[in-house]
Picture 1: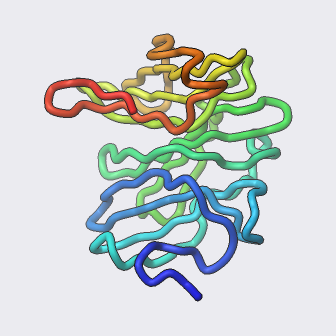
Picture 2: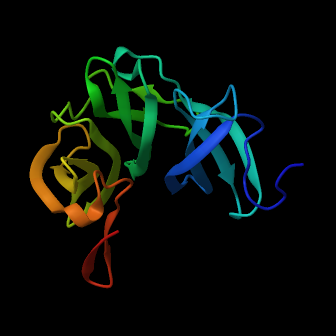
Length: 198
């Protein structure tokens, strides 16, 4: 039996919707995906599109873990941004050597993605948990939040960029033991004149 309302890939594992975006007249949903079995394993980015947010068509896999900086856990969660008619997707790349780092891929057609040759765009910060980049544009600049944590203290780290390629750390946006060991999948945006972290 297959879902008739909620999106379900043809096979494999699905979790963590990523990069939800309206681009060139269609809604795009990316997701963490193991295309080989319905279990957690090395992650890919699956991809589906919709014209109405109800009926979804599965597209070819958007990201494969095919680079040295993804040779362990693969391509973890992230987000998408449109700039000058191009689609930029940000994701956590996981390798044995570098740990969890943040990387970038770009597309003109939202089907074929080219990984930036300068990846990772944000390297290791010296802790195991550093993931889930969420990028948004505020006041003419791009801001990225990443979930992190160590020693029983969860953190959200904040970065800024003018071009989506080079990122400057701004520090810790929020932290606390009440958030557990790591904060996952944070989001940061403006709503009704206020800045919201979720």
